[in-house]
Image (tube, rainbow, N blue to C red; front, side, top):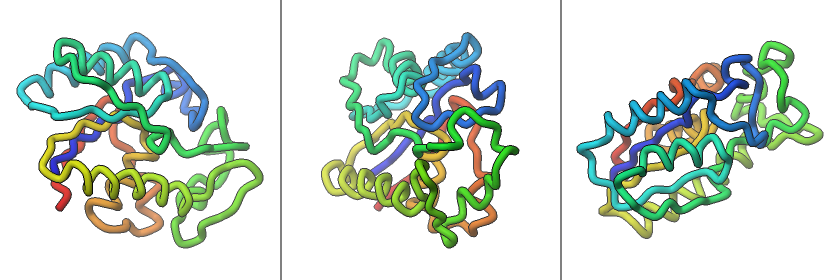
Amino acid sequence: MKLYVVRHGQTEWNVLKKMQGFADIPLNEKGKEQAEETKLNLGNIHFDMIFCSPLIRAKQTAEIINNDRNLDIMFDDRLTERNYGEFEGVSKSSFNYNDFWSYNKNLNYTKAENIQDFFKRIYNFLDEIKMNYSNKNILIVCHAGVTKAIECYANGMMKDEEIGPYLPNNASVQEYNIE
């Protein structure tokens, strides 16, 4: 299975460096332009299906990329960004961001989703599509946190100190061959 994973385009909260998580923040104008550019960059690639987070920033990105392709976009709650709970809307410099992304520490928070539960959610989704669509080209439009989990699923678990800093650019594409 070939996966093309796109992080959503830029939002105002990306510009302000605020944690978005479950916050349903739309793309800003630059984010829409980034999605258009990604659409052009992916123009010669055939996709059998598109899976997407139901959050508006991912949905808008997927719809722009899908314009002219006319594929059904399958929204899956498992692709929603990690629930940042009490850290939603705050700067990552205002809390211990690296501990938040430490897989080995697996800290529990009052409201935020712990990392191992988050990774299990993403791995469950990936296991399911691998089982059902092994010979397909699949586009996934999601979030930075989801891309961290997909990277670990495809290439092995990163060291704890590498998970937090792993941050693909807005509307960038990562490619994976999943056996």
